[in-house]
Image 1 (spheres, helix red, strand yellow):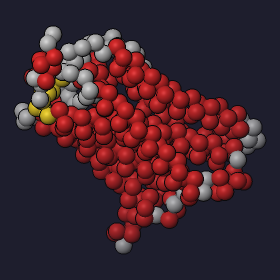
Image 2 (tube, rainbow, N blue to C red):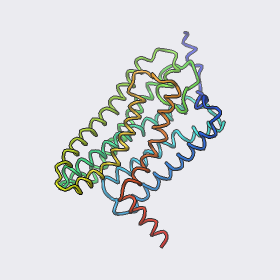
Image 3 (cartoon, rainbow, N blue to C red):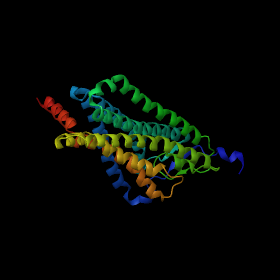
Length: 309
């Protein structure tokens, strides 16, 4: 193929949910409701944590950072997806696609490492409670959040620059947003090197944090089992349940999507997995932390009472 043909593509077209053409309005209504719930839930969590002094602890600081990151993460993808479902423009420029991919990767990876920081916080709280306030100082909390964001930015710059150096000969993205593999499939040339790079990055940003969280919970569980009273064990487990639920779903979906050399699923299966980690997982965070967490529920109740009084 001649080199001049490589520069023909100036924009991409999302194929989105075209295989569900008869159900696109239904999908729009369902996704819009989930999106509103996600935004409202995360905004409520951030606001409650900022305004209620009982929640000014490292655990809730990390939770507020995770909620903020999840909110931006959904803003990058869902508005465009919703507009395409009601027949608005499904075109996106190469620059727009690169920008969307950059923010998607940045905040997706930031979320992974924020969950790891939250796991470390729970480890220190349960395994080393007497030194908790010293170890989890404000400085350490800010350093952990800064580290998570920095890793996200560095990986995003590496990944996006590698993808958009490729020449593109096709323009139809078999997805509803600019995810890495669907965009790479549009290249004119062999993408084996990029596939290997994506797999290496996926291992580093998924397996390493998962491993750290797993080690944390092995140590946490071994400590909890040594607690004499059943009530003490129950309370200790309860403080970890919300975080563990979010971790399992978040890492589980991301691992299915990215820890395989090439997509072995159909396009519809890939999109279903993508819907899970772009729509369901961000909603899971506020739902789990408000329904399962007594301190957040109590803070919400106090805020409502103040408004009504």
